[in-house]
Image 1 (cartoon, one colour):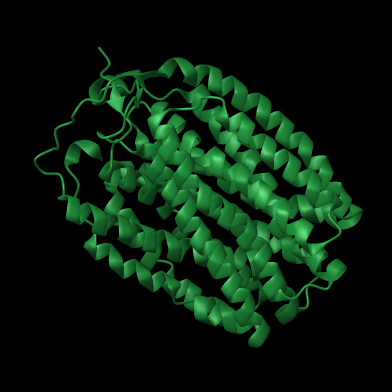
Image 2: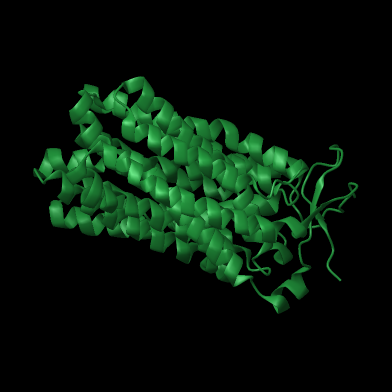
Length: 416
């Protein structure tokens, strides 16, 4: 009935075979909604905790007299850990899936939050951020594979549900920081370790569902579709997709890390009010991330990628010159458009290399997002030497990188 799909290279020994459903049968069976809901909710909890790091930047900046370059280094410590390890984790789990690794990785986030709440030295803050990044590195590759397994053939939809949880989790960080961390101080971050504990329990249960879905078998050769792009075009397409996700992620990272300071500096709003404006932007990101996947399933991922990257360009160009209310409106429009590309980019990449889901997910969740973190550190340095307003004038041109989508190949119809 169900044909196994090898998720490792032909040269690897003892690869993991994921019992994926054949396309026709998958559509008949439909998605496993309970599993999708569980992994999406876990993504929500994971990214809620991660977003606290950026949300408490004003507190850390004032308490420890940090400059923007040091703030950028905190972002880099978190993103670089995830960037360095996610492809490694994905490559390993392609060879040998680890159904309970998600709950173990969440434990790293748990300890990272506790350390951040008690940190009184800049180096300790960096270590705490790196621990939270380690949890992200373990979580994303395997959870993306689980979302695909539970998709019932609706890969874009499943990826969007998965991304929806993460995007809403990211948007909740500023709200929780405004309501809890700002009034009660840095020590209150420890309260969020209870969220990590809840996520550990949920992920352990998902691991029990996942375990029977995998089994070790000998490698079998898979015939390439006659209309599939050549290996050279696949490499070019992957590089283009990384560049596109980099442009999107760097712009979102610039707003996530420095939008609060931009609003305070230009419009004189309070820290709590600025965090609420950041929440509005991040919530729009969450909605856009959910819509992008089903639209890609319906109309094709390539056209969604085109529209979502280039479509944001007029609005990003206008943002540095807008007033407070107009900035809030523009941030919503930008968030809705630019975030709709994430699911389509990741599923497109998975379909280009169909037997390396873990590694590809790790590369795109890790490397591309990590490069965004590196860019955030560079932007912090630029802000110290110029101004926050100048940073947003420069970042406004990032969506123009969407023109590279012209180099993406046309995929065979059966993999859309």
